[in-house]
Every structure is written in structure tokens, then in C-alpha cells.
Length: 159
Image: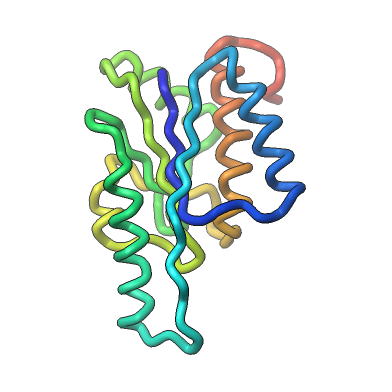
């Protein structure tokens, strides 16, 4: 199984980068993880609704052109469906059984995702009704993927 994490923007905070590196290292025995960052679009000050949509569309185009063919696409969005850690593990197992060898997670930028990106997703996932920074959600996603693979393998970590 190959996991792709497509995200808008670069991580600037050292503490988040340290956590991301740690979970990427922990995931190596279980799966290949590729993190693909696309440039974020400059947000005009006092942006209008139309300008906000234009930013999301441009970022969305950058994301979608990097999605591997035949990949199962999970889009992270606050309006998506929640899932437990056990549910994520089961979903990964089911996707493997269905013949998927690639799962792509898409994380939007500061303004979220365009409707086109949301429509492209095979599943829209929400980690919480709360809003997190797009940088922080990358770390949370990696931790949940690590937890999911530990659950799949029946190894201690998940409580």
C-alpha cells in the first residue's frame, strides 16, 4: 500500500516538522508515504468571496494534477464524515482487499478546498467538527495512519 498526502503550502513550524518526520519514520515498516506539497496562493487582503473561490480553485488545480491515477482519494474537510481510528484501519484494509494499491489524502490550504476537489474525492473525511490549521492536520493525519497500521497488524500502540 502506498499513501500519498497532497497538501497546500509548506510547514514552517519546527515542532510540526519534527512530529511529521517522526511519524514518517515510524510508518516506514508498514507503508510507503509520499508527501506532496503544492504552492499556496497569495490571499488578497480583505478578499471578496469571488477572490477566495479563485484562490481555492487555483490551489485545487495544483492538487488534482498530482493525484496518481487509480488512487482512492480521501479529501479532508470539516464537513466530511467522521471516522474512528479503528474505522480508518478497517477502511485501509478494505481498500487493499478491493485491489487499491494507492490511497491519496488531500489537505487544503488556509481557505479550504474548491468544490471541484471535494467532488473528486471518493470519501470526504472529517477529523473533527473543530477547525485545525492545515499544517497541524498533516501531523494528525500521519499519527492516525500510524495508529491504523498498528491496529491492522495487531501491535500495541492503540488504546
